[in-house]
Length: 375
Image (cartoon, rainbow, N blue to C red; front, side):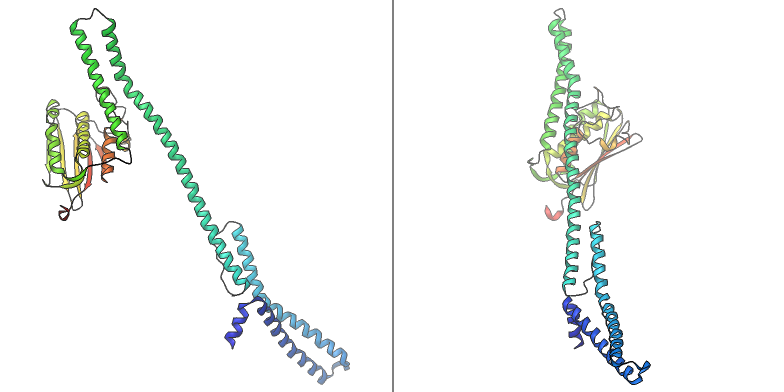
C-alpha cells in the first residue's frame, strides 16, 4: 500500500498536488475538530458558538497552508534545482546532469535537460574538431603552397649554376673563333660534365616526384638484405679506391630476409653510400653494419668527417635541404638523395634516421625481418 502511494506521489505532478492537498486537509480536519471540542468544553471568555467556529477555522486554515506549503517545498526545491541547472547550461556548462527523482512531468523535463546537455556537449566537441580540422586543412594548404614555392626556388637555384656554366662555355666556343682545339676540347668537356650533373639532378627530381605518388607500383618480393649490402659495397669499390676509403663491413647473419622491392631498396643504400663518400674524409674508414633482432633488420652506415650540426640534423631528409657549409659546386648534389631514401623506406614501412657527433655521422635504416615460418 505504501509503495503504491509512493508511486502515485512520484508518477504524476497532478497526483502529487492532490495528495498534498488531501494530507494537508486531513491534518487540518483533525486539528479543526480538536479545536472545536476544546473550545466548547473549556468555554473560555464565554464566547458564542459562531466566534468559536471562526477561531477554529482561522487556526485550521493557517495550519492547512503551513502543511501544504511545507509539502510543496519538496517539489518547488526540485523545480528550483532544474531552473538553476538550465541557467548553467545557458551559460555554456554542458557537464551538468540533473538527477531524475520523479516519473512525472518534472522527471521528463529533467531527462530532456540531460539529453539537451549531452547533445550540446557533443555538438561543442564536434565544433572544436571541425575548427581544428579546418585549421589543419588551412595549414596543410598553406604548407603545400609554401612547399611548391620552395620547390620552384630550389630547382631554380640548383639548376641555374650548372646551366649558366654550360651556356657560358658554349658561348665562348661559339663566339671565339681563335680558340685552339685543346681549349675547345677543354671547354666542351666542362660543359659536358655540367650537363651530366643537370641530367642527374633532373633524374633525381623525376624520381622523387614519382615516389611521392600514392599509386606507385612496387615489385615486392623476398630480399636477402645481407647479400644486397655486400653487392652494393662491391659496386662502390672503385669509388672507395678513388677517395682512398676503406669499407669495414660487419654482417651479423649472411641470411637476413625482408619483404621489399630490390631495385628501390638498392637505391636507398646507393644514396647513403654516395652521401658517405661525398661528406666523409678521404683516407678514412666507412663502417657498414647489418644487425638483427627478433623483429627488425638494422643497417648502419658510418662515415668520418665534419659532423652534421644538431640544428641541421632534423631536416636533412627534407627535399632540397643541405646545410650551408655543404652547399657547394663540389659536394652539392640535387639535395634529393636523402629525401628519396626516406620515401622508399616509408613505402616499405621502415624507419630511417641519422645521428652525428664529433667527427662521426651514422645513418640507420630499419626494416621488419621476415620470420623463418614465412620463408
